[in-house]
Image (tube, rainbow, N blue to C red; front, side):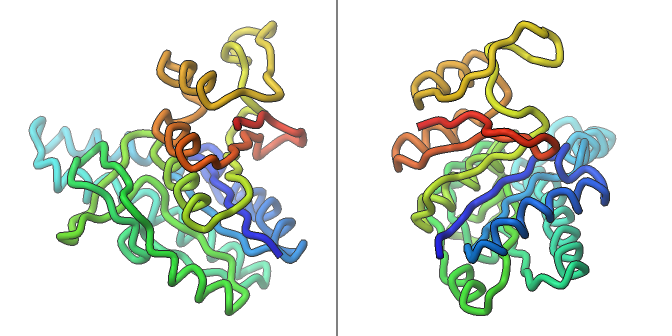
Length: 241
């Protein structure tokens, strides 16, 4: 029995139909006898909507309160996904970043993960539960909610894989791997079967939106292979190692 970490982005969990597609990926791994940790982003454009609502109040919000507000979307996704898994008769439990906790520094809006307490995850494994973790968020030693920057759920997943000593971190998205260009705009874009951490970092730092650059840095430091796959299509995806 191994530990599998899967992350699903906003488009993957955007509605109830897609949540059940996500459940299929999760339960396939669980049914193989693996312990499964799932990291979720906010549904669809939830974070953008929260930021727009914030701007209706102020253009200079407290950084602390901003993080409290925009972290809500992942909480909704985590709870809904657990409900779907329960509906399918699978035992599951959700955790927010502050419940584990995932400790970060105090750099609100772009916090860095320092360490993760995995005790509650291990306890859930002992009860044969699937664990769903809200991505993008953590907590300071003072107990304040922080966020990891847009795309930060990738970093949550890779960090959990590192601290749990999982074999890989699977990043599920709406594309079936990493391409040389946006395949939705360029039909001649080349799909990569494998990339090095440095190659992926160069792409991320130059604007590629497939992976959060901090997640690749974390993966490189802890030597965690990342597999980028599609939620909606079968295929091998791209491995970064």
